Length: 392
Image (cartoon, rainbow, N blue to C red; front, side, top):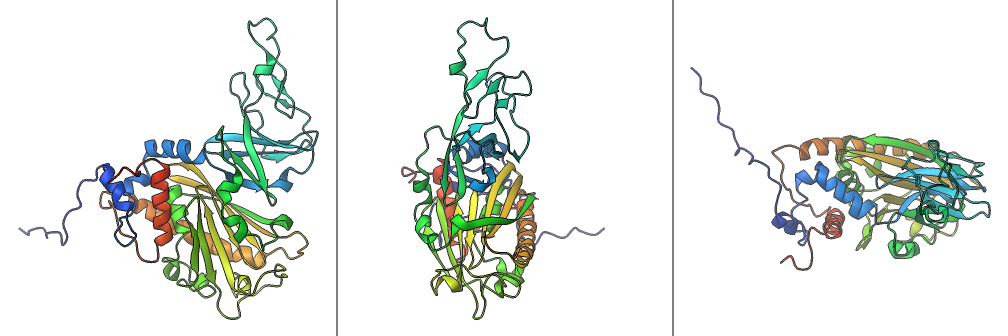
């Protein structure tokens, strides 16, 4: 009778939900720190708290102002698990509301976008609102005691624009968008963001937690093995991180000699953006706007990622690619490059998510190429209230 071989390594311990000590291990200098515990990428209770504390309390870029260009135009989006309706009223003012009727909570508008709205009528019981959100009609409510239509307008949502981009914030008392953007506003100044038009949009669904997708966007430690076409144009050890205090994180990577932009061959038939410095013409800039967006500037196009958590184990990502509004070329070469790169990323994120769920994984260690991921993880823990100044 044969004897079963002994395992060559110790059996992994039973995975437990960790104490504050596990979070403190992340909140150390990067050369000493441990990574986020694996359970944090699939825990339903934590996910619900992330929606409440992060996605429902920060500015999220949801597209471009020209998507709602005329009076009566509208756009519906999902932010932090809630439906948001953006409309342009009869005076041309952009407004945002929770996409919820004040009667019994029915969603008001189903379509993703459109034009020609004169009012907003609930499809359930026909409560009707004007485009400023005021309740104008409520059938069979005249005999209801203490009911005043002025008290039942749509719940407004903070909305701001920045250089053509649309931003919303579900927090009833948000700080200004300028505080959220911080140093990114100056970094983006040379790029003609007001002149952009959308050339491509691709929507991906990724079987991975949103934090894994965001982390992946902020390191190129994985690039030699995952993105061979990318490192031919931007070597993975190049560049510098110049904003890393939160909620903005990122910097630039350098292009190889002779490269003009990020495409498969580094070339482009498009005009490069005017007014860029010699340094800008040699670089590609990448910035996370925690927790929901990732903005990248190349020499002739701009990309925007929008992370939309669908649950603790699934993420929708909306990827937009923009060119100058007068640029006739459709940037198919750039989109083809990013389609390849994106799908490589989503596959490896899904592999990472599967591994994070196993009993064999608890906490790992950061490499010296992952200092931005570490900074983001620290910021995440502080924003979630999982570590603080008193945690000694």
